[in-house]
Image (cartoon, rainbow, N blue to C red; front, side, top):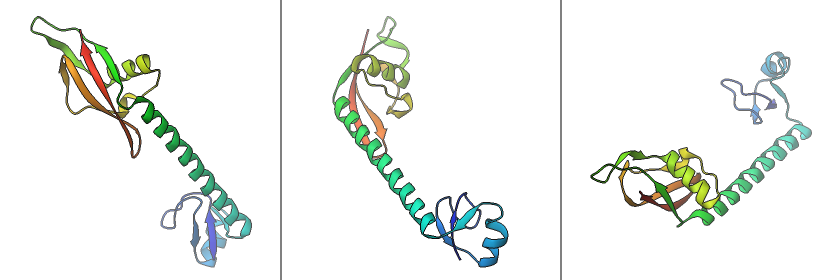
Length: 147
């Protein structure tokens, strides 16, 4: 019997998937617990419409991420840091500092967890930093560390 799962069921499958199970298992376990419904035309159409809606939302999010990446790619932001007598920074420039600089300079909010730093920034200069805006969508910005 084909059923459409309403919740994840161990050893069967994931929610909103269509699976073949034995008749007794469906009638005696899945249906009474409201874990599944028979795979009739209405249930199959509902699953297809949910999948189409998810794909549409994913495409919209990807387009928005690509637009954001295009706006900030190649830009330069300035981060002010304090230094000692020899020109070494007190501490280092972190992803949080870079995210704050991007939001204030470019007006775009960027999550600090999306900033990829190759190593610690502990000296003045210009560094290239990668932003992972969305899976498969990245942008590179230059960070100028000044006094």
